[in-house]
Image 1 (cartoon, helix red, strand yellow):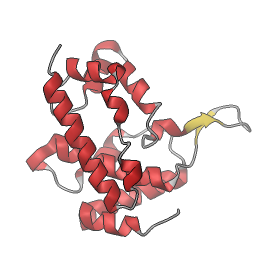
Image 2 (tube, helix red, strand yellow):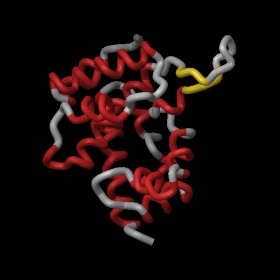
Image 3 (tube, one colour):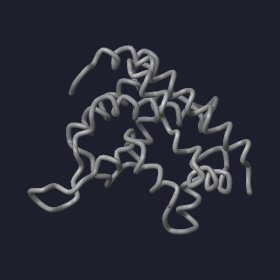
Length: 175
């Protein structure tokens, strides 16, 4: 079955970092519920099977199957993922990105920084979350205002460091 203990430790370390970061940005209670779906059978078993310790197990599942059932389960239950915020626009009858509430953009930042810290370990530096966003999220439907906010906050993390950026972000209450 792979590495259930290692996978459990990795997702729990990640979750605890996100919780701490969410408290630093003023959304602590929200952080307490971060990624609980990763402990569900649908996500946890895949995580154990494809665990590597240096990237998401969903990437390996996607590589082997052409899709990740665990990711589809995860993104549909966790509002801190941009993919959650796509819906049918009534005017166009097409799938369009909707503006993400600011508290979930804060959680996105916490999630991206925490994931980078977990996967890069001692090689982490504060421009990694920005680089990942610019390299990996191309083509993803993102509401223009959400994209701008997320990009600006990732630049802030890169320039000021994540702990200083979180202090600044905490003060921001709306777009």
